[in-house]
Length: 398
Image 1: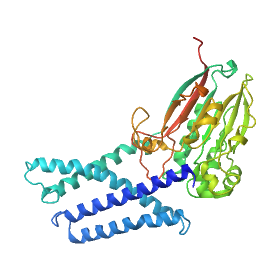
Image 2: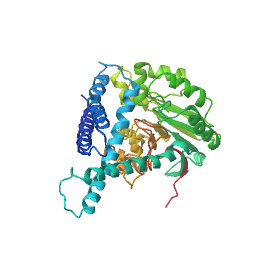
Image 3: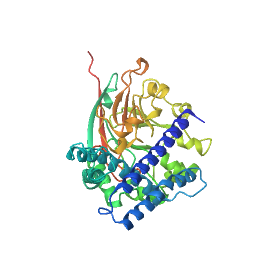
Image 4: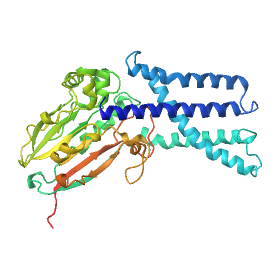
């Protein structure tokens, strides 16, 4: 088992263990609530639902091992319940503390009298507040982030070149076609020189590729549109992912490069790296830096596209002046560094711009997009949907 997959499995088992702990805490609180507040029939129904929720990870594990089919509605229930449990219990703790203070600290037992009621009130208030805050990302246009990047030795003919970075559309997951058309209209308005898409366009089925084709295939950067696959394309379409996505108008680079030339004659070598998830499906899938960088010539400005920011290391970081990635969603909750977000618990580069500290790749930059779509839950707080417009300029000589 690879180091990356081993780490993923540790995270997966840890997340499932936490899920079961949260379920047990919720179950204990449910049983502690007085019948005057929660009728017996309601409590029994809640307990039955809790038991079903606790065995849901069994289906998740078996579906990942392809013993059982992947049923989309069950995935959504799992992630939504996980999120609700977490937010509810975060709010329940201060609710319990306030209940203790209101009683003057006379009752030390957290499951007697008004203390469970305080936990219930705190949990409901906090969960409700989080959902209200998330409404902005559901109905308002995504944020457009504009950044200017200066590179030493940049060909003056590339000065002012714009790159629009889109990632993680997750077509069909928690957002309809009208929302996707809003994204497409914004791309037309921005009219970038290069349109770059860093994977996870489809979420669950091939039909989403056809939706992408209808809405996004007519779009193009002035000098080109480029894209790479993400893990979801492989999870959904398996070894046929590249063929199917190209058939639906996806401008795919799979461990290959393409030379884009500006109207002024400036050249950008765009390198597309395949996603590590592909290695699970076919020997010719997954990252292959030798193939991807094979046509790079000395002196070229190199723009690299990868789905997962964990690939920005070593040879790729040295070869590419600018690398674009996605995958993390910024955890969908939190902020860009230096502010924390959920993704920063698992990724060194969670969202935003990062400069290489290695002398061999001095001045080289990684941009991690928090993306436009959703995975698991239809909630974003702080880390709202975004697209980023990057403008290239030569660095001023000191």
